[in-house]
Length: 156
View 1 (cartoon, helix red, strand yellow):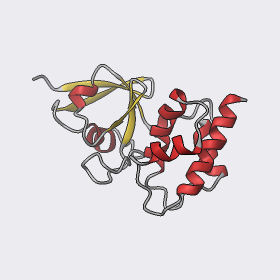
View 2: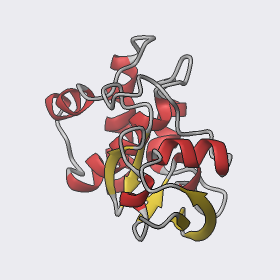
View 3: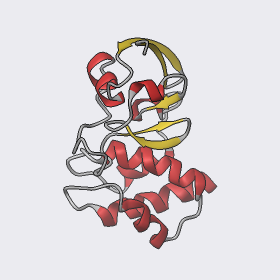
């Protein structure tokens, strides 16, 4: 198979040089310096490495860069627009929904897709969603509050 030479990340085409089987996480962090995407478990179980691939959440530690080639990749660095945070990013700050911050990028990236699909989630919906993203600090009540706040901001 041919090496992957470019990717579309956060709306821009960027040059890379990677074997197709290399993890997307490795390319993002090591080649492109996009360190907002975190290495957590390396098994796709914790959610810290979540990015959006064509708008859908994907665990970048388990996604080969060859699979991501030709798709739109969005990382936490690509959410803000014109200097303004995405509503979910702002809600995380407003609600104090981060402590160490390690899980935050993955939570937010999965949450962006979740809120797009379910703009008015119940607390039960949010808690079901969170089962795939682990927070080592246990700030789950504040994360739920952030999701509720972001849903309100988006619908205003």
